[in-house]
Amino acid sequence: MTKFLTVSAILFVFVLSGCGPSEEKTTTQDTSAKETVAEKVAETAKKATEEVKETAQAVVDKAVELEEKVEPAIKEAVKDTKEMAAQTTESAKEMMADAKQATKEAVDTAAEKATVAATATTMAVDKVVESAKQAVSPETVVLEASYGNVTFSHGTHAESYDCNVCHGDGTPAAFDLDKEKGHALCKDCHKQEGAGPTGCKECHKK
Image 1 (cartoon, rainbow, N blue to C red):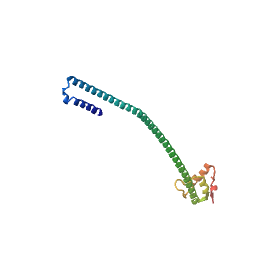
Image 2 (spheres, one colour; image 1 turned 90 degrees about the vertical axis):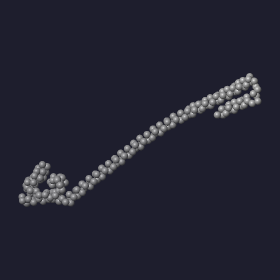
Image 3 (tube, one colour; image 1 turned 60 degrees about the vertical axis):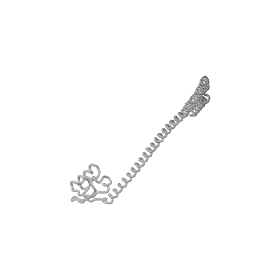
Image 4 (tube, rainbow, N blue to C red; image 1 turned 180 degrees about the vertical axis):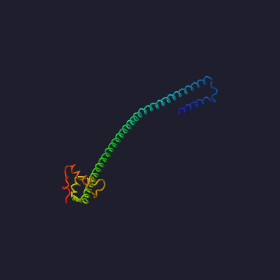
């Protein structure tokens, strides 16, 4: 804009110089003046053009310089971002592995404690059952029979055999034995085990 105003002012001065009282100048002088003005205008325009080219070239050079500076910075930023992402991923993997290990250890500990508790409970129940047996079971039982009463050690049999062998399923309780049931239960068992009396007088006592 400054160059344009300068050129316009010069033209205005030269135009004014050709007007007024000097109208009597010859045609040759007018032509010479016009040529001089044209040369100055052309020179001014040339200088302005060169300055514009120089300015444009400076802008281009600056843009190239900025590009050369910015591009490495962008590449470095991308590199740093990738490295941070990789580190974050690795940290997440390590945290997941630690969490899995901690969970496994907690489960193993809970299972071990549950096993110990179950074993202790079973032992406690067994003791209660044994105590109940001793509390309600007589050491010796006498079965009355017409041929002679049969006395046997209930405690010894209870230690060697389960209750259901004689009492069957359900809660053990007193039950009646006749000759047929008694011989099948006691005599046959003695023969099978190879221990215990099998003769009549060995069991029946009058």
